[in-house]
Image (cartoon, rainbow, N blue to C red; front, side, top):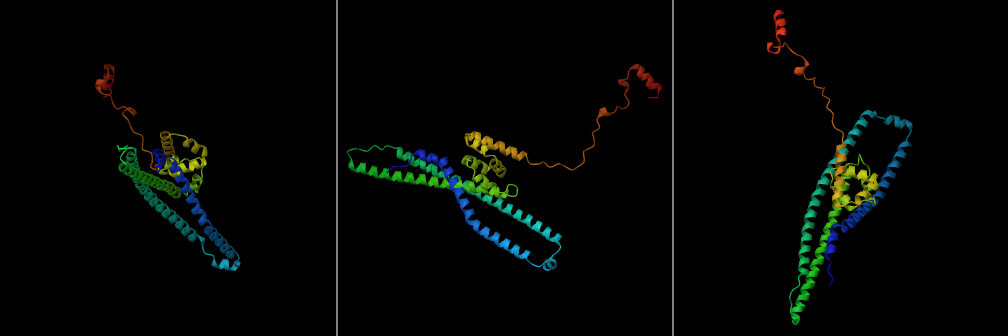
Length: 291
């Protein structure tokens, strides 16, 4: 039985996350497509209802008209409350996903350690007497069992890493949804960006300015392509620069307090000079003047 090589294991943290990202984005797009007919039906229902309302007699519209001042205020308050609740739910969701990702990272680390341990077992060359047929058969059976354990461990590690990649995508989506009032549809734009690498996506997902950076990359695909060609160290530095750029772009609060009065320093005016600072002529003049 052929076992998977260590090179396959190393791809768990490189190639597989990219496939996991693609699968995750496909699942997200599929879910949105399935929900689209229901939304279209709702929109058609709403347009029919609006058309029915428009066909009512003018006299009925005049009788049912209410002062719009209070209604508008209530609508604005309701919308503000809805936005507040949505952001609160998004914040809670982001926290849950962050905890889930930490858990998956711990599980992945444990799974990789088991893979390395089993690989070390496979590399061992036991000293078995070639003339001992029973010993040779026992060693062959043991080797087959170790290969099966190793392959199972590799598959488990890949599965966990794929789940971790899905959590990364979900985290970025939650952060984009929380900023949908400022960047509408930004997750759909960046998730379909062909130049976006998984390494970039993961760093953006972990960033406090995830929505701002995602919006920037969605509007600048060439920049995303440039990031995809960078090494891990260069990529981390580039994302850190973007974080600093967008965090410093936030407007600073300006105090409305009045400016303090100018300070009065000793050089702004001189009092009467002491006798020790005068020459004799000045002293005589001062004494005659009554000083």
